[in-house]
Image 1: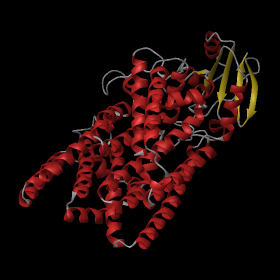
Image 2: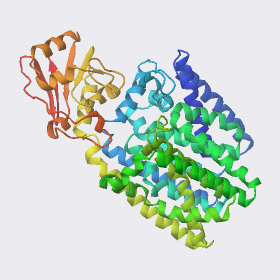
Image 3: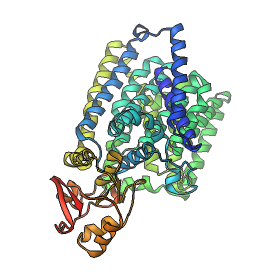
Image 4: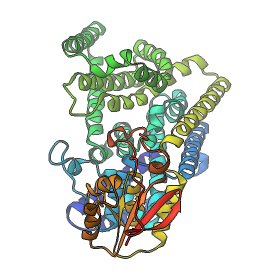
Length: 527
């Protein structure tokens, strides 16, 4: 119940924050009012019924331990690298900073209006009250790790309600074994991770308390509309699979065969390009195998589920079929507006974790000692895999310590009437972390998109000098990151569409620029 309560609180804070922003008031006002009501209700409920640690059984303690270990690894990793040097992490930080500065984030429908309007804003409104209390960078480091740690707990609760002996395996597989789970932390898919938590909470709500389902679905939509489409497909497929029990076995098989044949015929006429490219591209094939090798054991679990055909089996087969069907239809073009097939495919790890757990539960034969040994093996393999995967991105994707120190130096100067011309996306972190506007950000805080390119080519060009003077600020800084200085041409992973780091013309004339910081990164003050 703790995991469902956390997801419900997250959804309510998201909904109330966006509602307040939409009505033109500070999102913190409805969020604070909601928090006071929730705390009062929780205190009243706790006064009548106390839940102690003694009510948790062995499996509960094991799963809480797994989630705690995941939290520790994630937090230690981000404490070491600080944050990613560019990409969507900058965009999320900018949006939260906009709320901190009293700005309003527009909320629109997908594919209606501009990209900025329908870009998912749920995570940012949820993070906003925490950013009012704690440093923004700390919030960016902690909240995504906490959110992704809750999702396997929700999955554990679903499985435990139906077959307790499988639940621990499912939690271990979902937490550590499938890289798709913590990949949200790597490519900064924080809205997707939040919506994924709401997706699993929606399924759990159907089992425990249907009254929470509308809140979870609305939270899913506000966190990321793509996940709402997946949630509807999963829940509809589960209802359809449960309804098939009313038919005879032969009729069930005919209906399933007809549906499979229809999809196969459609795919013959409209081939799935992404899945075909996996077999023709060596790099994509290697990446696909590295990400989905744990699904091998899920294949055996799928056979067990198909043959046994009880409530949990039908749910997971329907869940897997819904996700696979959406991936194929998106890849072939019919549902391309929902999302790219590689992003949709990430959600397949949830049902595959349960199917893999079914196979492991059959292997241990109910032997508790063997089950503990299996969980220990999963834990060791999973922790090593997670650490290796995260560390593989630290050098090419993590923010250099020199740039973090330089940005903190700018913050410590307490400059008034200041603006910064950032020459790359690492410099875009200046606005979220210091509040100083930059020339080119991801979404907000931008002043002049063309100016950085002009400075990169020739900082002493008369047109550049004139543009800097027209900014009309007392303090105009030019920020050159350590990445552009030491690794020009570097293209970080997950940021290919933003281009390579520039090769900067470093001939800044002392007549126009004063070098005020030179410790890895360089900061010039325009005279």
